[in-house]
Length: 368
Figure 1 (cartoon, rainbow, N blue to C red):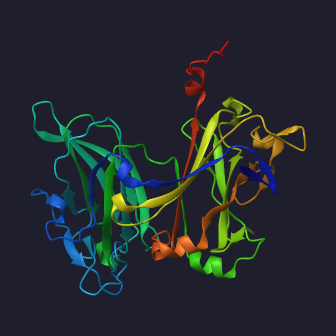
Figure 2 (figure 1 turned 90 degrees about the vertical axis):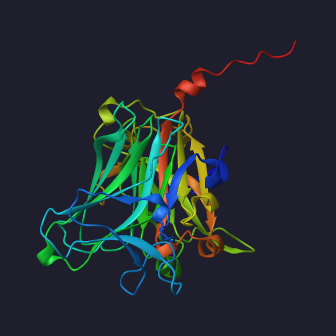
Figure 3 (figure 1 turned 90 degrees about the horizontal axis):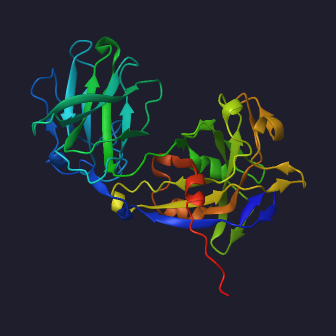
């Protein structure tokens, strides 16, 4: 079922995603001294350090909760000179598909001028892995908590990935760059990631009218969309209360060239289980397919939000009706597994075109 403003529509499905079903190329929580075969560059200015968790420098894997356990990789940006860097490279990897997603957690506690650069190092055609390509740069900001990042790759031959820590302003740095809980899968990266901080406090103070709206995101096609979270959805069972999640379209920069209504698209919402071992994660996911459903008999749910939506000054955009599930995830499950590590609720969202799949279906002739 799909739910919208307390009305029930047909068609939904729910699933738990065991990450072992993904094609896993590599993962590392840095709990062992061999740091998963990663190596330091011999031509850089400084090294990354295998650092044990301590108060103020807690790891992400165990969040500093286990004595004598919990490690990260750390690059100190408070010493040396500006623009000095250290390069940490993975072992050589052999992909089976030409599509990868590098996911990792990072924390930057030094200068706002510090940066973390992600590289890929590919086979140069002679069998030697040395051809470099810059993929992504993460700049420090005032938020010194753990964050999640995704970097898409498209590599068909053996390669390494690498993290380059760069010192921005050592004189005004009181810390450095931390990375932890890395995974590399042969899947696409999510189109949108929303991290809601202090979610336990939100659950404790929420009432049935509490609503959280995400920033506006964009799909690969160019559609604007968002997610609405109701921490206390109004639905409950013998285990307790539930949190509801809902999907909606949002007006955006590309509306004039988009196809309206936006039908035959699949929206997928995933609440991430942050277990450090990707093979043990049981993220919770639900999907819906957009169609010609209407509200009040004439307003198409998936039409242009500028036409059928309501203006929201927080995003300076129009948001369409939200469709989703008041029973998306139990409060009991949120607290039982690793959904709220560091008190962050992390949500992935995708909005994908199914038209080519629908048009390629083979019709089944009725039996005579």
